[in-house]
Length: 339
Ligand code: HEC
Ligand SMILES: [Cu+2]
Image (cartoon, rainbow, N blue to C red; front, side, top):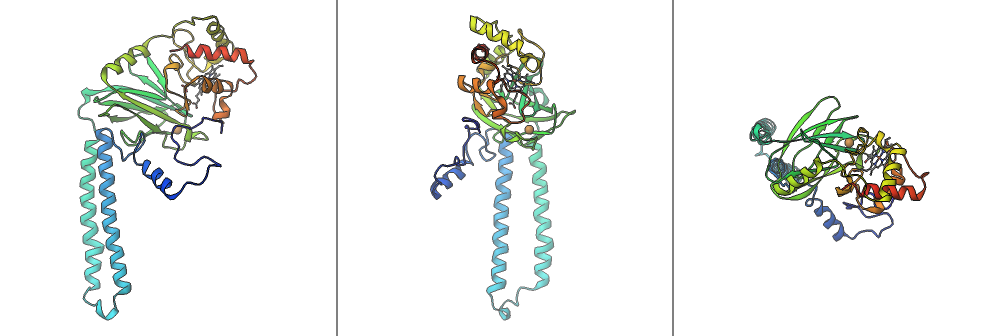
């Protein structure tokens, strides 16, 4: 794997690193319960009610497991002539019929209640965001706005957001554990999910339906920010790209056109059309590249443009290794100008 790939969230030791001690391992496992991508670290109402369900099921299962283990130990260790007072009939009817009926009915009612809370408070709310799954990145469109981006969803804190999800190719699944449950992205139809972030923060999401070789490198970020910051971001995203301002960037733009990049990528205002790959109009403003698996900075941008398949074997973006270094540098300069 090229250096830097997937360096965002590293729970497992790198190959060749010394084996972690038990303490380090426990810390790593516990860290899995917090952080930017955990269903047990809810940051909004939908995720909170799902997390509560998780804890209730966990506690209930723990109680029932203890009970079963206690009964098994009793059966094994109590002398046969002294366990006569637990009658088999009572055990079968009580433990095999009455108990499950009561517990499962209670869970069913609770389940209805939870699915009620994951529905939106009212249809009025919504900021609508369309998310289209691609192998292996996310296209993000703000309804009626002309704002299109990739792998990075900005939302205002405290506002209900309607995610309308679909797919351009195979089935994917949209999952941002800190904010909501999973929802399938199906080609040819649209599924709707609601979420709200109650706190500002950056939350990581991950494709949750195996979608091909690079499924594991199909992540995204949700950036929840105060309303004013969000509006500023959105106003900026709506704008077209500015024309290249330096000689190098102008060369880079010419190379961009000549090498066929616009067949797959749109740069609004300069090179409209392509939708095979991410919209690059404001690519320089994004935190990450390539499905939130690479930080967005000059070395990673240069490495990606030179040889994308080295990072994501199987990607539709071709390698541009054959292009001379100077032309590639001008391409990177052009992309860096797409603020
Ligand atoms: C045949 C289609 C195709 C062509 C041609 C192509 N790309 Fe791409 N590009 C893609 C796809 C698909 C992705 C998304 C890959 C992924 O993350 O899985 C991508 C991703 C990118 C990204 C990362 C964007 C982000 O936000 O993650 C950049 C930058 C980029 N391409 C630049 C270029 C440049 C510059 C050229 C021309 C030299 C080019 N591409 C040519 C398909 C293409
Ligand atoms: Cu996927």
